[in-house]
Length: 295
Image (cartoon, rainbow, N blue to C red; front, side):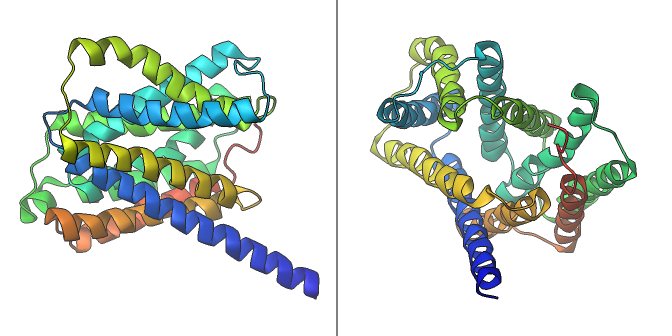
């Protein structure tokens, strides 16, 4: 009886960590949206990556790990996919309502299941088909032109496409992380993401440098801080929880994103958005119930 109670408390602790992770990640999106549009997206990603690179390199040095890992091609690929995903996500946050960009980003579990079937020969079963149809129905309801016009929202097709590229890149990065985690230390995997970002974005940033003002620097520091804190809570909380349960709790970021959109950016939601979001959540739960079991 005592062991069962302790296990229940331990699972509750992990759930609380995931709630905090969603909360801090949502604050990161607020920081991105608050920064003056004159600061390019690639510069924001560069600063965020530089912050993360310093922290992970320090941890790797303290743990006396081989800083370069073993599977360098796959580690570099993970970094490239992560960089593409982050640039697209930041672009979507800046150019779309916060609630809508967050919902689109959280279609990535459905894409994970689809790509797992294509890339690693995981069986595409009836549940996956139902999950995909359910999730896409939710997206169609949210992005329906008539419903957007009722909210006085204008979205250009480029922003929508880039938002989905971000979700797709996130899903592919997730699959590479799962493959790498079989042999590589977690901090080596984490390091390659900002390392590749800093290397690839440095020439673009320095050639097209825009000096942030004090206000921008505060929000940029917020991006790095909230992302790192959120990553810590996520890492602690996701262990030994079922993927479907973890994905469901992480979906709280949609709630937080909607709340911050209303409070800070005068955004509105209606019944269509709520129904669409719930359908995307349902698709996420179905798709993650057996996600990546063969990895």
